[in-house]
Amino acid sequence: MLLFKQGVASIKYEPNPKHKAPWQPGRKGTLCPPASELSLLEATRLLRDSELVGNKRYNFYNGKAYCARPHGEDLWHGYPVDWSEVPHCVRKKWLEAGRIKRSDMRGSPS
Image (tube, rainbow, N blue to C red; front, side, top):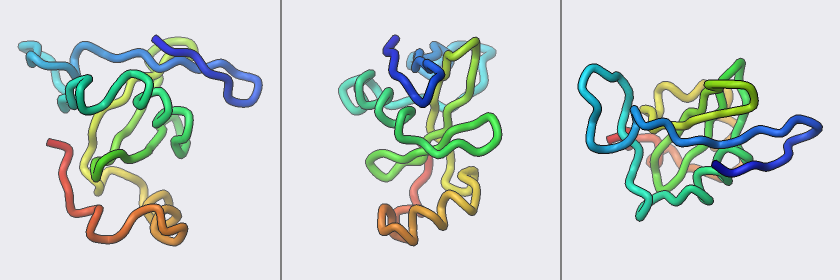
């Protein structure tokens, strides 16, 4: 678990086992890439630099979109999502800032 400050609140990234291989029977959720593809440090950076919409945070890495949700006081976990699950206002902001291209949004979480 890694900790960082955002404003006055401390939030922490904590991986959730339901998004890790091997898939856990009876659990729902997309699988996160292995640590060799997305380190804990990089996942924490994604959370820190994410866009907050409601009670979810969004970011992208290596062509994949990610969503983070709180699962405890100041604890967040993230997982891959389809680009269509990223709010339009966030995708538009990233496009206008040149952070992504339309072709980037054709990928899927798996």
